[in-house]
Image 1 (cartoon, rainbow, N blue to C red):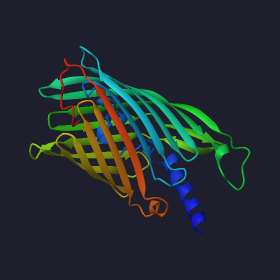
Image 2: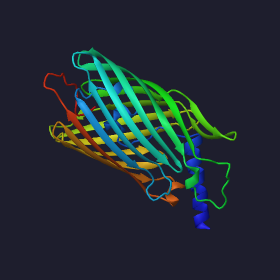
Image 3: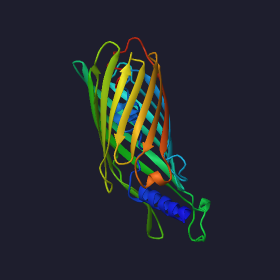
Image 4: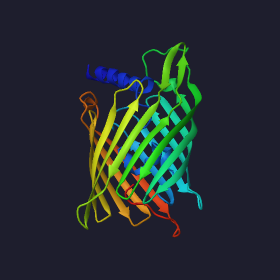
Length: 302
């Protein structure tokens, strides 16, 4: 009986995620991987910045989402322009989506702050693997589905000495995949509002609160509230809330000006998910290659 209930729960959760819920991957370390949600973030590190991130969501839950991303972005020498490239592989249940996106950002300087305006263009290759399903009966009319879906996005990002604010729509183009008149996948528009500040407590300690608000058509409003303690500009310890799903714990290590290593663990609070899993895990590594002649604006914090 328990296995039957869990199977029903799995099918229900994955169906909601695919057809009407959140398709844009959720990251607990969103404040350290800004290009994943906002094309205007391109070039904001004032260096060639390379980030690899891997997320295993709902560990132990068969068919649960797992996501790998590789992002590269850089300013263009002699111009107020940033360019970015992102590859994302997202798996959930029987579906796999591989995405490639390019970003362009134009920057306007205001004193010690920068306003960046960004555009995104790319495509996703969506695969639905019916043949891999373990079911009691198999409908021979159902075949594996492959389809390429285009995408466009836009964003604004402002960063100053002590604060940042971003507004983005990384998924603006609606698209869907149907089989025999049944909607199997529907991509809805996504909108993100992000922000954060840095407060100097003393020479050894800084506090950095962050927030993220997600608006997805057809899904409930989502948000993350986060607080990081920055110790000696080297260790970042954070905690965040993502109601009603999880409480998240973050650790970042800044190894000099170039290398950052991060880990996040989500502790599942949702009652339904709690029947089958208790944690999600996320690993990140960022490497920056800087030039001495570049103007640097809060490179460590935003």
